[in-house]
Image (cartoon, rainbow, N blue to C red; front, side, top):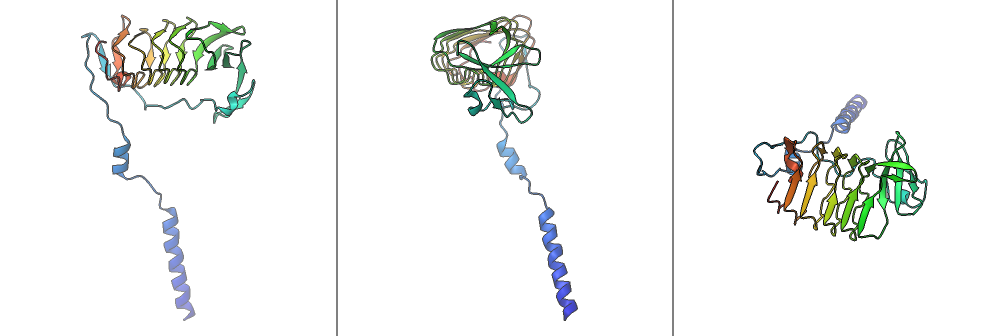
Length: 235
């Protein structure tokens, strides 16, 4: 009788062990439903080819700075990799971080001007990047001129700047990350420099954007760049 009881207990232990090591994974149907289909876009210039962008769509950059870290000068923001020290400009309009090459990235803007010229330097540091979400949700800005020291516009940098009607992007810009102008309803046209590497869905939900100018020399444009830019008529 004792041997039988021991055998039953051993069998139960084996069954429980099997259940604890079986991994839980999403079904094929769940994965299928989570994917986003791409719209077919019309090519208006025979010399320009729309191509699939490499990689996966990204939301905001993994190095995006937390709101709590933006409260005080020199606060630390946990980015998951290493901390970023934030500084407030002497005019208290910008917050920025210092890059490894001693240039800076603008991380936020708190001014109230309707026309903004992003400077080529702040507190003696050259500005090379407009960081992720730096101007996000600023409803007051109508026009922006970016200095020719800037090379990168981060993801969601101008998202939901609904009053923005004009932005001047210099040829120095070589990277525009995903969703940079999402929900910018006031934009009706924009010019993109020829040497830019594009992120996903730059103009998503820019419902009044009619014309996107790509400078001469561009041969390939990622198809997702105009995803959900429903009013675009000319490229």
